[in-house]
Amino acid sequence: MSILKVENLSKSFDGLRALKDITLSIKQGAIASIIGPNGAGKTTLFNCLTGFSKPSSGAVFYKGREITGMSPHKIAGIGIARTFQNIRLFGALSVIENMLIGCHISKGYGFFSALMRGRRFSSLEKSNFHRSMGILDMLELSKYAKHLASSLPYGLQRRLEIARAMAMNPKLLLLDEPSAGMNPSETLELMRQLIRLREEGVTLLIIEHDMTLVMGLSEQITVLNYGTKIAEGTPDQIRNNSEVIEAYLGSANGQF
Ligand SMILES: Nc1ncnc2c1ncn2[C@@H]1O[C@H](COP(=O)(O)OP(=O)(O)OP(=O)(O)O)[C@@H](O)[C@H]1O
Ligand SMILES: [Mg+2]
Image (cartoon, rainbow, N blue to C red; front, side, top):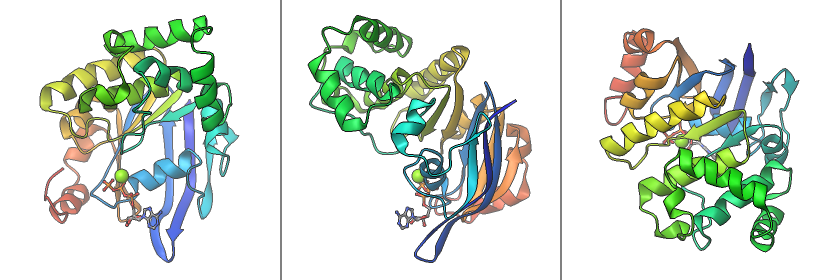
């Protein structure tokens, strides 16, 4: 059964066609990836799936229900959480406070009101607190619970972003370049943790340039180039696809 369906999705910015007629289906429980050279449209696709950007045409279905054009906090409230390519934490708040804000967003509060509630009631909210600590444990962050988010090393801040998205209790988690800026051993740790999240029943859709992570975790890979889906398949199928190899050879760094 598919948890997410995208049908003929297009997005233009002032004449630039960032996404052209994308059709995509993600199986419930899968780890799937979106890859493609810089500027291919990957983040734009995530923005259209999560309400941060309005598609020019096409439709998005989550568990069979159309969610095209819904607001970001409504989409978060029904079970789709995401992280951003650039870290968006509340640096002046502690790790656990960042988590409690995530918990409130899952209840359908807007971001700002969640921020206020997360701060004001944090000591009272035992169940959110325990759930948050469980997620921090899973991502090996619980010993930092009281630290300021901004005091964590970069790799751990990226992990905290994933933890906070998990606090929203998602069934589908979209990660935009989760391993960006991580060294190879941090990336391997992250891979282990992503497998744990999937074992918790979360479907993962990951934008990533790190091919160790993509090829090591994904059951399904979709390749975008200039806003068009040029290939889809298993890691082996993608590795050997001549159009994919050509797209990357033509890109700035000439590799995956
Ligand atoms: N808000 C916007 N206004 C105008 N153009 C945009 C906007 N957002 C994205 N674009 C353009 O759309 C295209 C796709 O951008 P997008 O950020 O989706 O690429 P990407 O695949 O995520 O790239 P990267 O790997 O570098 O993150 C690019 O040409 C980009 O400049
Ligand atoms: Mg991007």
